[in-house]
Length: 98
Image 1 (cartoon, helix red, strand yellow):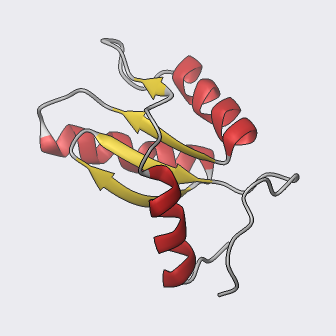
Image 2 (tube, rainbow, N blue to C red):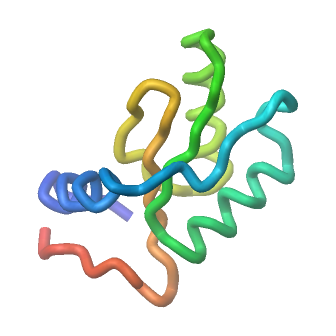
C-alpha cells in the first residue's frame, strides 16, 4: 500500500498524541515482541514503538527489521520511537483522499 504525502501527514498528526504501545526490553527484538507489534497494529492500525538503545546503527537495524517483519509502513522516527501504520481489514482510520 502506498500513501500520499497528504495521507502521511494526516497519520503523523493522528499519531502525535499517542503513547508507545510496545517497548523493547533488554532482550531486543524477539518473536514475542514482533507478535505484540502485529497484534497492536491489528487493533489500532497506527502505533508507536519505543526502542531504548543509544546505538544509532542498532536502532536503525531494529526499525528496519520491524517494518520488514510486520509489513507496516514507517511514517517517521523520532529519537527512540518509530511510528507505524498498517491498515486492517476493518479500516478503522479513514484516510483522506490522496
